[in-house]
Length: 318
Image 1: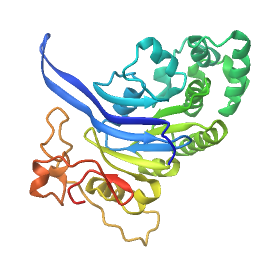
Image 2: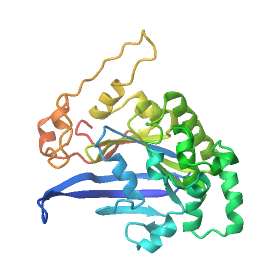
Image 3: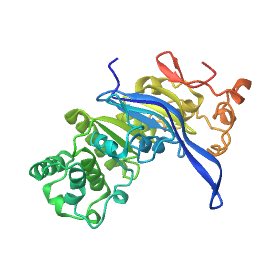
Image 4: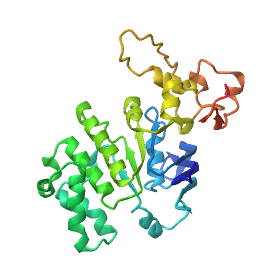
């Protein structure tokens, strides 16, 4: 195994719970001790229910949300410890694609101006900008005519292509894609996923792909991390995870995937109860109130995230 391109160690993000104007009554542990790595040219999928902390994890990696503690090591530098000026330099190599591209674009700007913003921010010489803009717009499957339009004139799929163009125009090493296809029609989703695969091959990109859709994650990922209530509960190669999930929560997620074969026998695992509040999580294993395999130890001791037969699992069953 080569040295990882990115290493995340015990990442934590806590948000204070406000009580009145000047006091807070505790914290929401949106991300609680998450660890993983990313290899060069790899796509790591991160999946889980809404509110599990996957988007907060992605934004914390770029310090769009400042992490509370932990390490994010890129090119032998812990980028959580450096100044904002130094972080600006690293953002050239770590970019982000957002769920709703329209919300991240200025509607008054043309597409050319929108995808030029990273070039201007990183002081790319003017003589290089036009070539980069023209090359990148073609890479994402749009024409130069689109450069003179405003966002409102484009479809959802075209807007997401613009969002991807803006993310890759500086030729980064890592792209964090936060639910990049969830707002798109199914037919357009496949086009965007194929585009991301094509760009990965041509530009040597590494992706952290965040989604709640297991079918999408299976299509694009090399490895998959499963999050529950701010914690990573299982991390394995895509093939191992989808063939035989170990963690009871992962098993429940997998059982919810619709059958493609009408003759296939598949048991649906229905989780009891509701997702606990992250501001008042259960003691011990966070999943134990909903787990059919819960033991006495699960109520008091949070399991470690450990190696089990070629994958990582946080569960007392192993």
